[in-house]
Length: 204
Image 1 (cartoon, rainbow, N blue to C red):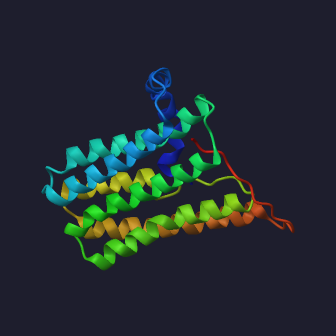
Image 2 (cartoon, rainbow, N blue to C red):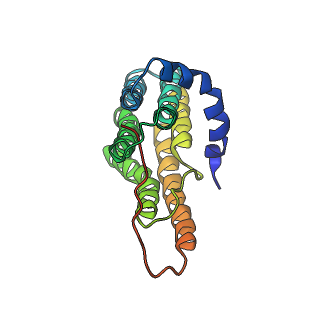
């Protein structure tokens, strides 16, 4: 069950023109990673300060940009031959920071404990995927509530003001996604007796 992640190849193709322009201008993949975090912060600010439904448009545009940058940084690194282990670390940190920054926007709309719980739950799928990669398995992505779904649900909250129900869905859906990924990972690793760590390349 890959959720909206199944559309990633199509989405990547739509961004090919932008990616080619970035290559020509020699833009650093790290710049795109940072831009994604900045867009996430902007979305959080709009969510926290603008009432529904006026928050919907800026939140949607900024989160769409955040997803585009998340797609482009790794693709740009591969296109330009700038994949490195350090880049992989920066990419992961940027994604996690962007996720948590967006959820921080809910602090003005929902109880602290619920926002904190949701932030913890939202990181669980990535923890499972990274653990699998460390064990030599293929990196798992997608799920009922992955990165794209979390962004979409945040837009729903911005449009409706239903912060608490949306956070509950994100928390429960993220936990379910982590469990499903863990099941896939457990099956993929099978009965292997020797586990070797594998490092995947990111961008410089």
